[in-house]
Image 1: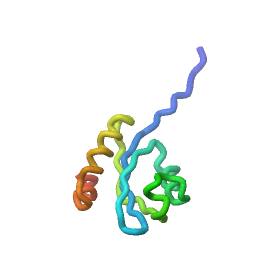
Image 2: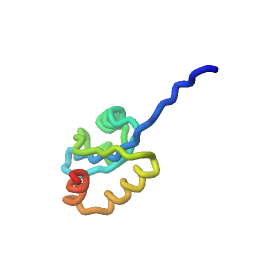
Image 3: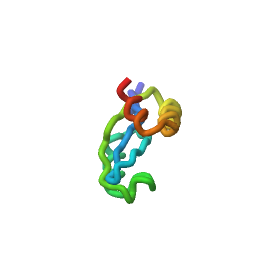
Image 4: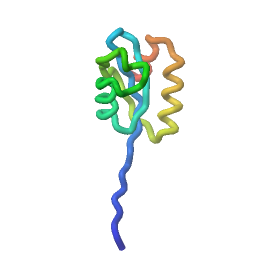
Amino acid sequence: MKKESILIKSWCVYLLECRDGSLYTGITNDLENRLASHNAGLGAKYTRGRTPVKLLEFKYVENQSEALKLEYQIKQLPRLKKRLLFKS
């Protein structure tokens, strides 16, 4: 029997601060690569004109579905509460 390599992708929700001081929330399964994409101007349309971006917080979750749900919840919050949510 041939052993198969299983790649487990950990999803995370992250919070960025853009050059103009605004906040951006997103999800990814490769945080390092996603940050590089944002800073290269290849990330989300929102961040393209606001580089460089700085990672403020991130949180790993069980799967993509949970990441999407948490991302949506965070995007509904006022700025101050976004920062506090990651601290809990």
